[in-house]
Every structure is written in structure tokens, then in C-alpha cells.
Image 1 (cartoon, helix red, strand yellow):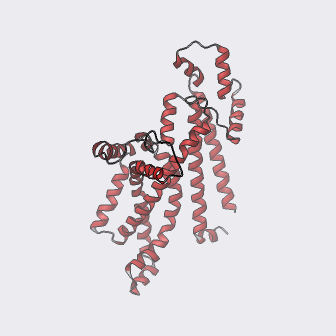
Image 2 (spheres, one colour):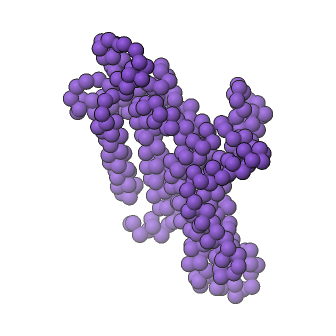
Length: 328
């Protein structure tokens, strides 16, 4: 419980710092979004109307500390303001429509990358020094080192524009009315998700592979592995029941952290494929200078990162009894 409370306190402080930075950055920029919005419209607007629009959107004049407490109050009540670009939609509605798609893409990609990378890493460790190990380990690390935007552009050009095997944009066929009770609609979603999901998965496999490979190599020298081999047990039983089972512990905690990082890291992939997740919302908000949406999105991404890092801290203590005994 002491460990839990210390980590919880740390993440609460980290969240407050992130919220403060999120508050300061837009206000440190010259001008304000309301004035820019009317300037871009090229129409004559009275100062009274500008002041009323500022109040409606939450950009009120006053001391900075008063604005800060109003901002904190809005976060605590989860009222993140009104979007300038999609007025009168609220920021909650704009981000709520996008976060589900990002979670679907990130969660599926991380689970696939974890399963594939861990399995490849297990065999790379067992057959270390072989041609398989010499090819698969550096090969996947090279793929991981390629910027996501390059991977996404290559996949888009090869399979969507060139071969035309898969659609190149959005999450379902244009003009389709979403019907969440129709199996055909889910198949359409899966068909459109193939390319962005492939990109989001392939760039993460290398990390899980190397992590599992290193964990396995450390365990293969343990006495109980040597004894299992000496007993003449089946090779697959030694690999999966004795070695991989214990080597999986650090990878499970890495999995929870990877989900939080994937949500932030796949933004570029969503932009390339015009996938209706947080990445596309972020791009549109930047182009429209929609600071309310930008603040809300940065807040959500920060909360995801901190939550999954906190979950990883809890998981490693819950799964490893040696750490619990060491803390007593």
C-alpha cells in the first residue's frame, strides 16, 4: 500500500505539471484564437461581439491565476470548452468521436505486436547465434528504426495506390451510415483498418522481440532450466513452460506501457491514412488553430500515458511476489 500511494502521488503531481504546461502554452502565443477566427473570416465584427464570443469559448480577460483556476474547474467537471473549428460542437464531443478509433487501433496493434514479437523473441533466444537469430533480431530492429511516416507512406503507396488491394483512407466506406448492429459494417471497419493496423503493428514488434530475447537468454542459464534439459523433457515444454513463462513478466509490464505510448505514437499513421482518430483531429485542430481542441487532446494523451505507466508499476508488483516480499 505504501508503494501504491507513493506512485499515485507521483503521477498526480506529474498530471498537475502537465495540466499547467497545457494551460500556459496557448496563452504564451501571440494573439488569441477568437480574434484570429474573425480575422480569417475577413468580416467586420464589433468589439462587443468579439468579447461575447471570447466569453462563450472560455477566453476571458482577467488575471492569469483566475484563468488558471477556471481552467482547472473545467477539467474537474470535464467541460473542456467549445471547438472553434466545429462550433457549436464541444471539445468533449469532438474528442469523444475520435478517441474510440485511436484506442481500437492502438490496442489491437500493441496486442498483435506483443504476441508476434514475444514469440519471435522466444525462438531467437533459444536458437541464439543461428541464422534465424542473425536475421530476425537485427531485421526487426531496422524496421523499428524507420520513422512511422515513412512506413505508412510506403504501405499506402504499395498496397492502396499501387496494388489497390485495400482502401487508402478513413475507417469505413464514404457515405456509409454507421450501423453498430450490422456485421457487414464491422467487416467494412476491419477492411479499412488493415493498412493502418499493419503499420502500427510492424513498427512495435522489434521492441517486444528484443525485450523477450534478452529476458529469455538471462533465464536459460538458470539451474532449473539446466535440470529440465537434463531430465530429457520435451524441448517445447522447456521453452514455453519453464523459460518463456518466467521471461514473460517484464514483457507484461512493458505491454501496459506500450499501449499508452502507442496512442501517442500512431498519430502520424492516422494522419497519413486520414483515420478518424486523435491524429486526424490533431492535424485539423492545428490547421484551424483550434486551441480548445488542442488543449483537450494533449490532456487526454497525457492522462493515457500516466495511467498506463502507473498500471505498469502496479502490475510488476502484483505479478512478482519477490518485490512484494522485498517491500515488507
